[in-house]
Length: 333
Ligand SMILES: *Cc1c(COP(=O)(O)O)cnc(C)c1O
Image (cartoon, rainbow, N blue to C red; front, side, top):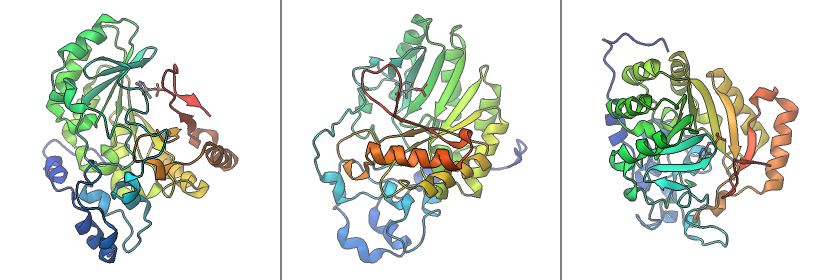
């Protein structure tokens, strides 16, 4: 995508946000799968509603109940199965919370929960039980978070996370980065966002202009799990982010029935590279209550990773990691 001139009208991404599908039955009917309605859960049973933007639905295969994109977002009875070892806060976020909205686990970098809002509810979300409503930053009050970062000179990198940080309007984001720019020891900004993948409309001229004007090296880490998520529109959006100066990386989660296959993972890496984006992490699933049906065991994960090493250039092979609470970094397998 050639960055459009400032006068090109663009549809407001907030309209696309509001038009997300929130009811499973209309989603199934759209995909020609209405006959599966009997298998749906009564609304609200999982405590984590369905939410899928229209553009993401357009990338699903018609008539295929095993579609890898559909599987990531359709609520199912499997989520109600309790399994031992699957807990609400699998990654120790609450213990690492320094002040509302700030999670500081690793040396030199902090996660700033910029907002609890997200455009898509991924069924495997590791923060599906996270008490966002208690996060002050989620209510867009940054003061305490900025004070915390300012008080620790070892923090060189701030990672905007969520929810999804790009759920905030660009003016709000600018308010936040203006505050960070006043902290001398912050040298790098990172943005962890799935919106360029699930709601590419979000990447508009205003966002690109904000990105271009930031005073630090910026990395945007998107989150795609399957090559089908990267159609031409998403590819153009990733390239536009790169043209705006961001280093583009992707993190994926290894998910049973979605991407636990060497061909699928290799294709994902190649599609990402075609869109100017390198694979960064391939995460083992965090053991959050309600997601056990997505688990891929460590042995299978290692085999898949070895298969990628055997067929792709090294820079297209993501690091296979898991998160162990209390460790000083993500743990390589
Ligand atoms: C994963 C994570 C990071 C980022 O780790 P990197 O290895 O630098 O990508 C930072 N803070 C928290 C709390 C995290 O969970």
